[in-house]
Length: 382
Image (cartoon, rainbow, N blue to C red; front, top):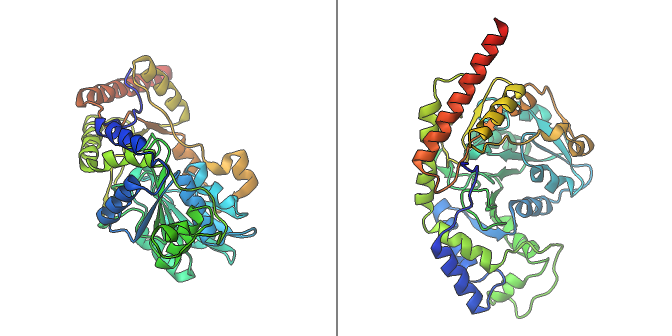
């Protein structure tokens, strides 16, 4: 079996974790937290980055920082992970879903403006598969209506849009370092604060509502409870695990992109749709997906691939059609592509360390399964 995912493991990470454990300084904001944030701030030219316990936590911090409350609305795609909506629903907002583009599976930037109301408090751009949304148009709409933009760049670490790192364009950016991501701390994430006006409060929220960060810097002689907040700070063990990967971030990125390219070259020309990377975007090979004709064929092809020893998966069930989405949100406009396109999508194995030979084998077996399915359909019609 070629597994769908394997979390990154590096001997150096074990060394750093052991060093951290022996130091007895395993709570957050120590040596490796500092090294991770400094690396990312320099590499991505980010104003301020705060490691968090998850991308979900980073999104929740955005909702608090923006003062989201009952009666507010946020605009986002339905084709995303539940945390994108849940972080704002937790504060009482309604999720207003708009349709996606069929090419990138990202929010359709041409549908956003019509969904804006006097209750709209934010636009959330989800960079699916590490391919950027059309941020120029989204930022233009946001500027027109004076709305903050949150980039859910959970899948976008090391991707860029017109030379800018994903997560650094909007008011806030959110990264994920979950075990399924390109760079992992097991469970973890980061909040990118691109507007300086929010930095001090973000640090307080992250430290349970206290000014302990300022205390550690020697800016106050004692720390105290200042605001609402929660425990959004990951342990130093998680940060040590992540830093070992950031040290070789380009090697990891290049390895994944080589697998992505093998898939693309071997699968083009077959009766299915391949990923599209928009002009001006540099992707990070977070995933490689194909889209077959419909959800029935997807089930058949996925079953065949698993019989052939290739572990493939589909992705999100659109939020607006789920019980939570029906309860806490609404779909604005026509669902022309969200449901249809999500039902066609199959994700192939993608992880650092997947060999070119296994990637080629997975592609060849997918091609065989698709062509067998296509020929079987033709025989049924004869």
